[in-house]
Length: 331
Ligand SMILES: [Zn+2]
Ligand SMILES: [Zn+2]
Image (cartoon, protein in one colour):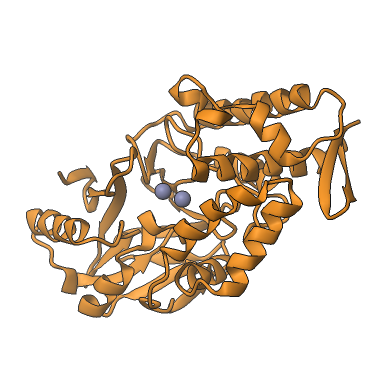
């Protein structure tokens, strides 16, 4: 299960329950006195036992972990951070902009749920669909596992002993997503920012930045400039040709934006109405909106909004609010 990438850097595959992604790839970096982990995987006993077993394969135990760097505050990346911190006392590093996401993911308040419902209503989602918002978000309610020790801004270097990891702030998939770059081996730990097959979800929500898709494209161009030999993603397989993959992902979003403009057909429409006309999950051959599960339908609306926002910033789309509903138009 453990793969040695280069001497002192290992990949562990941590299972995610009931998820087509199957695993989160987390990385173990050997230091002089202790070890560093990049991400921890989903919070489940299966995942926890799996990490312990894999660490044992290379003669390491959880008490040997001195630092945990979280690429972003999604459950498949930071879920086990509390349990690992408890055993190891490791320092937790996360980007400053992710701190709030980290907190709201655990302390889901009525206020936050209400804010999300108002947001979807404003974007044309019918009242009977709002139930799909509440169940999954409220299901995440848990006590806060551990507070971060070091808040990153991007541009820092984290010394792990043998390697020096440069923090590259890559907002888009989440506001405080970071990649880590190791310049001597030309390795990029890409988190969910760049994956070899799927494209990460880019959504405009109340918790996102103002223009997440615009930020994401800029963040792709940022990592494309780095001299990279090996990309170590948080899901799927290791790959090498980073510039080619960056270009493919940008192209994917251009195609989606074009499809959205076509669906709008110069009519005023809500994000919900547009999402209904778009084909989703192109990696899986394309799925009609009506065939998506309710939660996926809501994330399709948020993804549509990310495109509409980016196209508004580019001057291609305008919006008008009437009777508390936002309508978009292609100009
Ligand atoms: Zn993610
Ligand atoms: Zn992920």
